Image 1: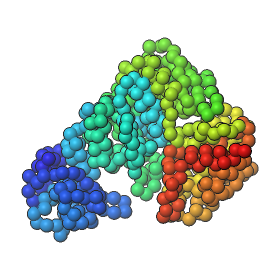
Image 2: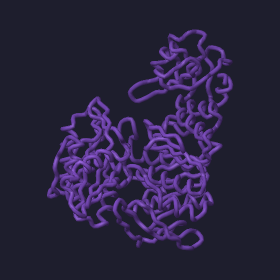
Image 3: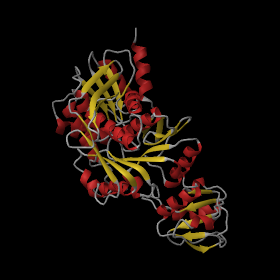
Length: 493
């Protein structure tokens, strides 16, 4: 595709060079430029793509897209100036990859908690209905026969459009993706019209340098999804829902437990506990007034809420009721209240909970199963807000019977500082809750298995689906599921 054709999608002005130049790819990282790539200069928190334009040109870039003039470029190299580089990258990518989202049923999910689980539940329901589904989110991108890790919950726009193109070419007819507030703010999903947008819940998170200046800004960016979708499915029980719907342009469908909703679950759901499974059975009534029975292999009230969102989405898409029930019952979400198969008289679950709200929700749900003891293994990541550490410590001390405090992804921050903040949170939450501090996470997992007893539930939280551990400048292989299973086998007589 030549540059002239691409520029029709933007407000770009050609400052120099030939608009007929052939563009073979799009790139925003100068280190990845190959001959024929159109390099888009993205401003960032720590680096600015404009500072690397000359490097991109030297690597054979077919042209440069920038917000401000860049000096020192070859006089014959096409240079295009745009108002917003990130928005332009999204517009260019949509055109370059042939508008792939139009070939897919697009379902976008936003919220603080539950995005990954809700996405997996919807994908399982769609699959049970015979659809071929792609998933994009915290756990990476996947479709039948393909899986890839991602650096961001919502990929950069050109990466996203490329993945959607590959997804459609692989025969997928639906895409379920997590739409983060930063993905909306940074124009990663600009130009995509969603068939369904889903709101799970909202609590303070991602507030700080490089993220959002305040909770109000965080909420505002979440709300943008509901001006970019045909149908908005929202949690009617969440206190922030009405603010999220400010200026919405979509048809609204509500789900919930406590308040009137289009899809409402009865509050008297049943907890299911079997070896290797914690789940819940519930009844939900839809717009037709007919109660229906459902079961999901994940515990607690929040799992019912996530399932309701999936049920409402299936109803909007007119999927068969049997597919909904089968999909919910059989769905497994990696790293989200995921039971670890062990030959043991206790239960171990892995979960990605890495802030106060998520930890509180999870531990509250697990305590409802009346374990002999609720044991939690957790740490906090470095290079993130200290408030998160205090909150995690408070929640775990209030709700667990034993806390095993350890490392998470320290990212170069001194682990001793992180552990000190967690200790402060533990004292605030409940100074009487016993805890042990084991800096090495592997040893902390071993300790949990050595000290868990019959009927206990051990929650290993913070990493969930992740298979690496960032310790200082090193990234180490670290699959908690495998570590736990291997050690447990070694303990067998």
